[in-house]
Length: 277
Image 1: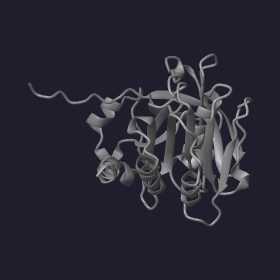
Image 2: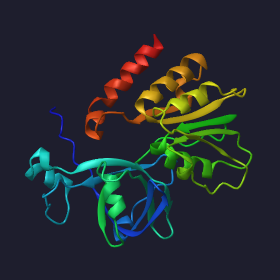
Image 3: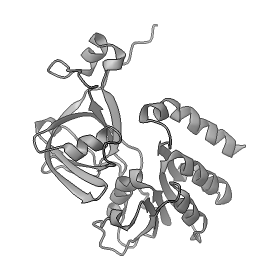
Image 4: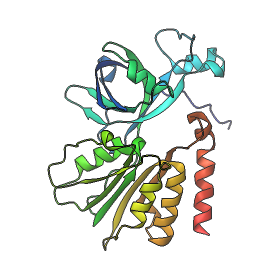
């Protein structure tokens, strides 16, 4: 029996409700509108959506239909996707919050977020996700750079009072620190990168941590280079079981998002093979 072609996923349309510059390089966008009527994102703390951006000069027929676009438009005119963590989902007001790292005109989604105004529309796919801190774990390790900060923040805010946590977040400088809605004594160790390579301070902090005894549930995400180092450290030096690790490179230094996604699965598989042998 011939394999049936995969149907294009259905896109959700949302409208910008409000925006906020929460740090010099982080912009918060709150989305709403009737398109979010059936949206849900309350299962995982690392829920994500894939934002869709049309190439410059390309307009799609309404109503927006990914299946039709794939059938009628050449591939180079299909929407470009950018993946972002769901920072918050308000099921009562049907509002979706996403935080964007912004560095001037660099990138695609960041500049869009910096210019976004109430009433602007955006389409996305998802949500996806797969991690939430296991309440049965003896303690939790959370580590990442700016790209992982929203997911780490959600995890911290959902951990119960008394949870034992070591959370490390590497950011450019003190101005990028954030406050989270945690009222039960959970603190974040902020690592200021300065002129150091991305991830260097984070690797040092995790490697020098005096690991508590017991079962650890770890979440480590961000730039693929430091993720590879920490994967090796946690799997080999600390003997953390694979099933107790949520670990992946969100991005790769020196590669575009498209170039990284094209090799990400193969790269991760190779790293796993290297570290299992």
